[in-house]
Length: 467
Ligand code: GLY
Ligand code: MN
Ligand code: MN
Image 1 (cartoon, rainbow, N blue to C red):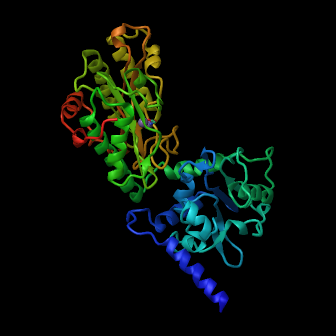
Image 2 (image 1 turned 45 degrees about the vertical axis):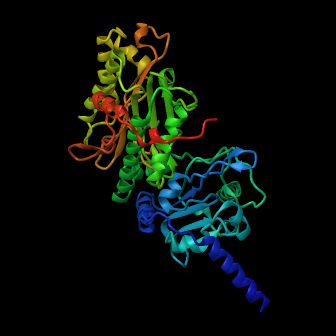
Image 3 (image 1 turned 90 degrees about the horizontal axis):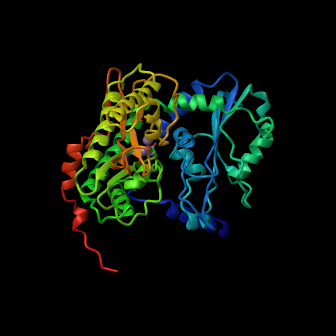
């Protein structure tokens, strides 16, 4: 009787911990993830097994971790969002039970869940994620699997900087068990080429479910950029502009950003991955904002460059127009069949010609000084998403087009150009004979940017106590 009571008490506690209301209704479906596993399996060689681990948890401060972010490959293949898990994917069905995939998950634990959040556990992985064969991570060691019987064990790079916790079944523990079972040592760790090749070829093409989420994340980033354009003024700080973007995209359901926001005024806009965002006054300068929402795992990547006082100077306008022209020329190449490298080449050619015309350089090779990065990358679960950069554009790829010109102080050109940093970045869906600019909702033409910057935002009405 006592045991029965304890059983019901535990069941009650779990169901209480587990119940969560008012969640978004547009998460990827378990059918989507199952379909991705099938697509992965189809690309595996005969008699092989793939092994995919969760990402590690990372320390933010002493005993506090960063918000957890799942390994995008694990999320893509399973929908599982927790740490300390491993997926085994078999090319052929195994054992008498004929399973072709197994997921080892974090064990449920009422006390830990009260401290660090809900876990879906074995039952959740079955009911919510659609897996049939699921075990707790602490069953991995005892699970009988002879990796030596496979012709190929496919896995991604193994992190080498982890320390185990005392459970022994955290990621560190699971990796140790895997390495020991598969006989992997530092010396014979196989190349990750095949894992990369398979995930590249799957993830570079977006499915209809992914396209829905990509459209959404890019749209809310654009709405947020537009609100910042309206709200921003010389007295605002970089961090506050970032905060407005964050508020707006979260208002629409974004979980956060897909990468650390880059919000740089004047000279700071010339630092490519500026992340301090701590200038207290944007002043009468250009503000370069590279901020993209993350929505259900999918990242936008949008940059707009705004004159904080609503008006570009002649020099700012000339540089802005050149970046815009480079983008327009690259857009024309955005259709199935174009070699991906051509996007970069074309943007570099336009910017070099333009910089010569403006008298900023004389040798086209020097364009690299002011335009030091590439023009395009794949976009999706990772901001710099997986894909084959040496291939051609294909339908349903999404890539950024993001030329930029950055002229820091003391550059070898007339000082009227100094401290101008401009990037315009859009997210482009490739179609058979054309493209769709998913970020068209945020203006790019200098005239349209100025017009929007002159408008007032609802954020300009907000009043806070003086301190
Ligand atoms: N936000 C990083 C990039 O544009 O690639
Ligand atoms: Mn980008
Ligand atoms: Mn960007």
